Image 1 (cartoon, rainbow, N blue to C red):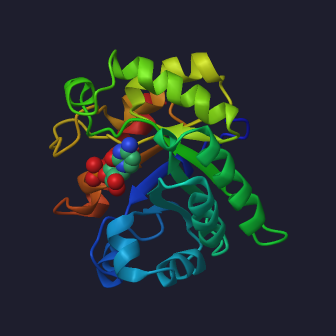
Image 2: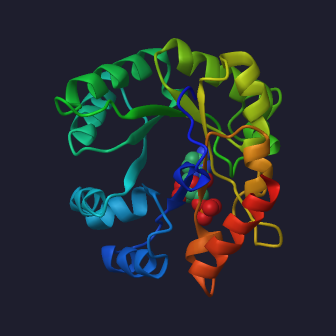
Length: 244
Ligand code: C5P
């Protein structure tokens, strides 16, 4: 990431996986101004529509819309074009859609970015952080290790003109080695020490994720469902500062 900021709070993306905009506002009000970057996933997007993007942008937040587009190239291109029109900062597609789909998405991104606005980042989803090697081999029928697949997907995404990939922090070193330092890594599967893994399998702590070289970490339930979200956030920031 060429212009990577030293301010870690700008590199922590809070996953707003809520069923309604009102729950989002309640959560953000509790967290005060600490949060700078948020993620709208399918649950919130399908509940709040594009309106929620505008509301969060008006609050001065950076917004990653995580809809994991995966369709034929023409449809993926149109989806990304429509989405970036709303002034988002980051969007994504599944690398498994193939090179032509990713190239089309990139074209859609360029066509849809409002004139004068910075081009949003286009990120490829490699292997979901909830997918174990066993699931990948035995259910999805992709042989080999997760690391091999993720590295191959990262290179494919780079060749297709994407800015980076979503992966587990555990795979960041091999991705950077294969695709270069400036190729962005966005890593979910983050669990502060002692918190519940839930449905995720390939996880690390926030400190470990940054140590491994993640450009952005994505964290959701460990903060949003904590009894005191602000305290959980502050504890995370404090342990990151200790590491620094
Ligand atoms: O609550 P938790 O911290 O597990 O949330 C992780 C977020 O990152 C979820 O919104 C999930 O959809 C998203 N995500 C993921 N793995 C990917 C891509 C996105 O967990 N590969």
